[in-house]
Amino acid sequence: MIKLVRVDHRLIHGQVGFSWTKFLEANCILIASDEIMKDDLKMTAMKMAKPNDVKLVMKSIDDSAQALNSGVTDKYKLLILCESVEDVYRLAKKTNTFKKINLGGMKNREDRKQLSKAVHLSTEDIEKIHDLINDGYEINVQLVPDDVATDVQKILP
Amino acid sequence: MKRMVIASHGEFANGIVNSLKMIAGSSADAIEVYTMKPGDLADEYAKELEKVIQKHPNDTYIILTDLYGASVCNAMLSLSIYKNVFVVSGVNLNLALALLLENSQIDESYLQSLIEESRKGMKIVSMQAIENEDF
Image (cartoon, rainbow over the protein chains, first blue to last red):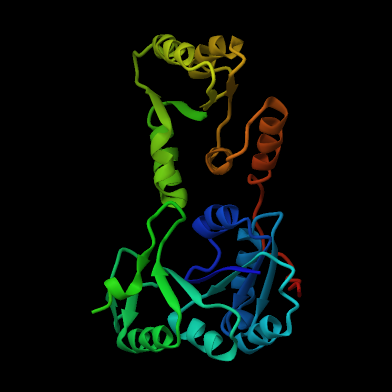
């Protein structure tokens, strides 16, 4: 069962490793990222950041979609993490296993505008979000479980 | 109801709560903080806290202090006579966070297990061989 799909450029960190996994009672985290599979240092950091009693699987976006579609993930209470809107968009287009997306943190970049405390989006990101909403996705902004979730449409320009 | 108190020499306790807010959000606002200033008597704070504890016999108080055997910890020691009070020394962020996020009832053996788990957060950090798990 997929408990949450989250976009967070830091992937696993304190808010995710402790607050979200505990709140969701997740027992498995899937990091869907092509970038991380090429980055040993980051993979090590993710293994360190995960809670002891939670399984961590890291896969490319294609392999992640394949795993989700095959049903092997069904037995887990799964938290899926993507680094960017672009990545979650690619994942969503390859699978039909979730309909909600949580926006956690997207770092500031030159081509991105700040839309809330931790959410920075480029024009392309915003187009992709509109496209996902048209596909029936519910997308909200929420940093930690304690915060109120805001519908992303309320902050989009 | 669980009530957390963090007590320290100087601003350490405020710093922990500040970090907890960043990681866990507003639930950390409920933590009571005592920061002993030079010239303060921690016993006086302990007496004030005792009055509050007596008014709430059904709440579980977890008092996290900094240095074992130092004056803040020693002042809180007198409160450990209450069945619903646990005094802990050597607080670290791992333990404070684990307690904050814990919703189940906390008894002594469970608190002990959280302490053991939190100790594991203190270690020499190094690159580990990556074994990527699969489903």
